[in-house]
Length: 165
Ligand code: NI
Image (cartoon, protein in one colour):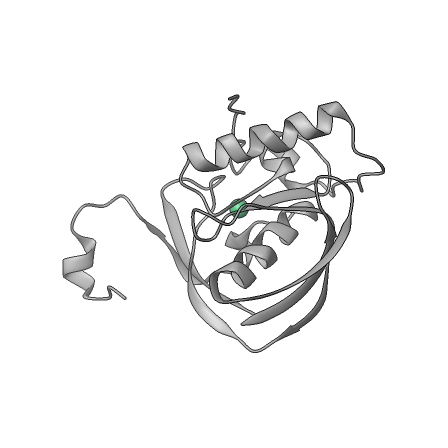
């Protein structure tokens, strides 16, 4: 198990456009394993390679804790509907904000063996795929936040606002 350092907002690596992966190498395999280790250690839902300082078009997700997925050179092929909800990012610790995303996406990508697959996703996984895809083009969710960015760490705010879901 190897953890990678998560880069935080302000680090220029998060604003760069990532390069496509041409072939799977032992180094890239190791990167993907480390990304999963880092994702689970951080209790995240998704992690993109630039978040650990690597400018490759790779992200990993796990929306249930038991559904690890690797997306290499992903393309969102179709999207529809809307969902509006809170979003956060391991590169923007302690913050959350409201973002509207498609309710449904169809994505095409390569897996860790460089086999092409297509996947349909809704709800949290659709949101996550959009969020992580944005990372590969140098974008953070804070650019899309509607209204304010809130602190997640203030102890009592759920009582004050009464906006638990
Ligand atoms: Ni993120």
